[in-house]
Length: 84
Length: 204
Image 1 (cartoon, rainbow over the protein chains, first blue to last red):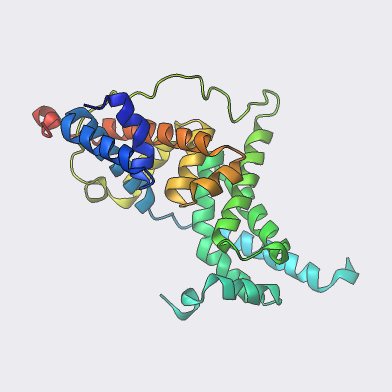
Image 2 (image 1 turned 135 degrees about the vertical axis):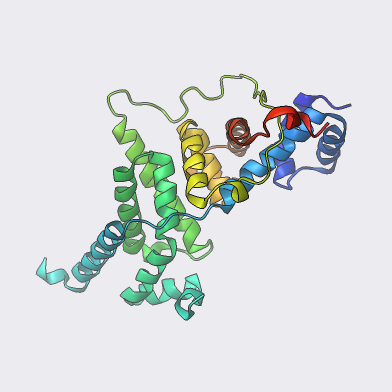
């Protein structure tokens, strides 16, 4: 059976669907045979899923309006370069 | 999706280049929340994140002509944001001039101590706000180099190559840091989300 260390070495590429066929086979075989690494694989996948799925919070209205103001000021400066 | 939301990025960029301020404002509204979150996760500070947000969009606006269009506008904006945020982080730490590489690559093994299945899907168990708080607090415990790589690869969906280029790292270094970041987050989230009691080993 592949070792847990070999499993961990291949896990990153495996999760990214970038593992070569022999690494993929090694990881899948190890997951079937080692209950702990089965859990590590599952919970690592879950970890990525919860972060990826999280909606970014709305920024505060004053931050949003400050940003728009700054860009509008920059645009106005660009339109009237001779006045600077 | 409103008709404005449906306009594709490249069209908006083209229109903004031709002087249509409204198009650039549409791009701002589309991405400001994600850019702020990225800046906040790197700098860990609201005030710095607000500065980075503004500086990044202003820089993008000023350099629209140099945007090549061979990557997505959003990816280009993410690159600008990461550079601004890392500069902010370095500036804040002047005096003790901490390298982003500090404490990394010491050859230590990655560890997986916390072995337990999760108690259902956290997305169902917690409110969006509670879950966001947990995710924020957890990622904040990672070193900057780890949380930045994780954000770029797993949240902002940059490729390994793009991440390597943005951070000036080799591809093996990106892969190694990403795996460590994922395993550290997994370890900490499992402590929070694991099934309690006798069912901890329910996978056996």
